[in-house]
Amino acid sequence: MKRVLYFTILFLAATSTGVVAQETIFPKGEIATTKTHTGTVWLNLLNKPDSLIDVAIATATFAPGARLNWHTHPAGQILLITEGIGYYQEKGKPVQIVHKGDIIKCSPGLPHWHGAAPESSFTYLAASTNSAKNHTVWLQPVTDEEYNSAKK
Image (cartoon, rainbow, N blue to C red):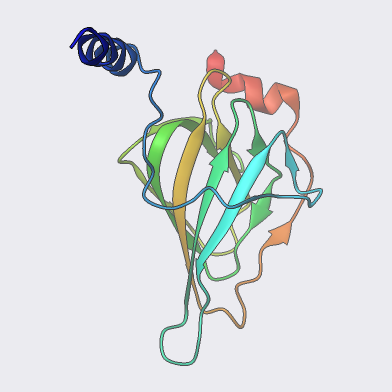
């Protein structure tokens, strides 16, 4: 009986302090090995576009402070924020702070970047249509000055 009580108390203490890992809907995927980001980013392609439904869907998870380079999507992209706090910036505009539940529409051809805030991981689902012409066009890395402008 003491053992059951001990494990019950241990479990309750762990869950109340956040020690028990939170379940995610989709696996994190693999760590990206390309040179198109700063920090650690995990990618998981969930749906490849095909002739019936021409939509690619992927998850991206960013370690705190990780971010993608500036880039464009010729046919646009939609980001559905599922966890954490992140940054999103379009060329010529201030950085936006985004949270779980936010939806971002990345306009076709518009240079932008996105990534995690310094103190938070960040995860989203990305949906991209028109696969024949919607290959990401990678641009220059986001500078520390650009990244840190969100904190001002």
